[in-house]
Length: 407
Image (cartoon, rainbow, N blue to C red; front, side):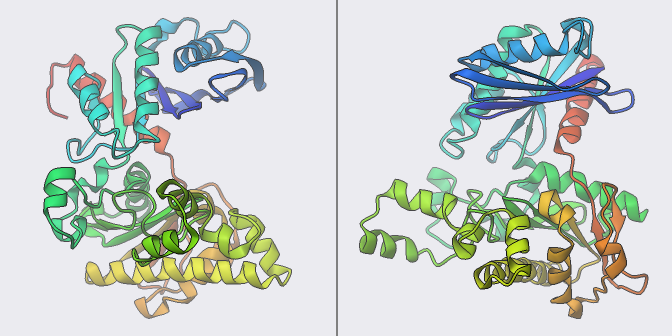
C-alpha cells in the first residue's frame, strides 16, 4: 500500500508519500502561499532532483490537485497513476475529548472536527480544508485522521483538570489537552525499542524541543501529564511563546498598555519567549551563537529556557515517583548538544550522567548519550510524526478491508 500523508495549514500544505512495504518515502514536498497568484510548490522525489514550480493556487482543492500532478508526473513523479495511492492520512491538531486514537474519516468524524474549531481556530479549519480537498480530487480513497491530542487522552483527571469552577469544564471543556502527542508517542516507542525494554515498564520523560516545545511524563506506556495545556501556549518557554506565567499578568498588562484581547494574545504567542528575552531571534542556533560571542541577553534567554526544561523534568520525575529515561527530540532537542548538556548538568541528582563525547557527536540516528553508569538513560531520538500517521492510516485501512471495526 502507498499512503499519502498530508499536513494542511491555512496557507500551506506539506506532504509525504510512503511505500508501506518498507516504510520508505517515495516523495515529499510542500505547497506555500496558498490563496495567492505566486504560490510555490517544492517537490522532492526520493531518487530524482528537486522540482520547484510557481503558479496561481487559490485554494486547497487546487493545491491537492497540484500535489497529485507532481506525484504522477512522467519525469519527476513517484507513481504512474493516482490509483496507486490507496489511502491518505491527515494530521489534525485537536481531537478534544472525543478522539483518543486515530480514526478513519466519516461524516460523523468530520462533524466532530468542525465542532472543535473553537478549541483550535488556527488549525482544525485548515485540516478540514485538506480533508475536503482530497475528497474532491480523490473520491473514494479512504482517509484517516491522526490527532495531536489523542495520545494525551490517557491523562488522569488530576493532570488534565484546572483548579477553576468546574462549570467551565462542563460547559466549555476547559481542560488540559496537550499537543505534540504524535511525536511523544512515536519517540517513546522508538526509545523503548532502542533500550530493548517494554515501554510499559519505563518511567519516561520525553522532551520535544523545537520552536514549539513540550515535555510529557509517560507512565505505563501512556501519557500521564504534559506541559502544554488547553492551548499550545502553556508550559515551557518557547521560541516566541511565553509558556507558563501568572495569569493576572494578562489583565494587568492589558490595562496598563491599553491592549486589546487580540493584541495581548499576539504578544504571548508571537512576541514572547526566547525572541523577547534575547532580543535577537527565536532560533536556538542564533541565540547560542550570540551567547558564545558574549551577548548577555542571549545567555539569559538560553539559561531561562533550559532552566524551565529542567523544572518540568524534575516535576515529572516527582509525579511518577521516579524516572528511568529522559528523551530529547525535535529540531532543537535533536541538534543542540549545548541545550542537552545544560539541562542534564542541572539535574544530576536524579542519577543522570551525560557522556560528553556521545552528546557532542552529531547523528541522525537514535542513540544513548548517557554513560554506562547513569541510573537514568538519556536518549536522542529523531521524531517522525509523518511515519506514525502513515502507519496508523495503513493499519486502519487494512482493518477496514478485513471487516474489523475496532483497531
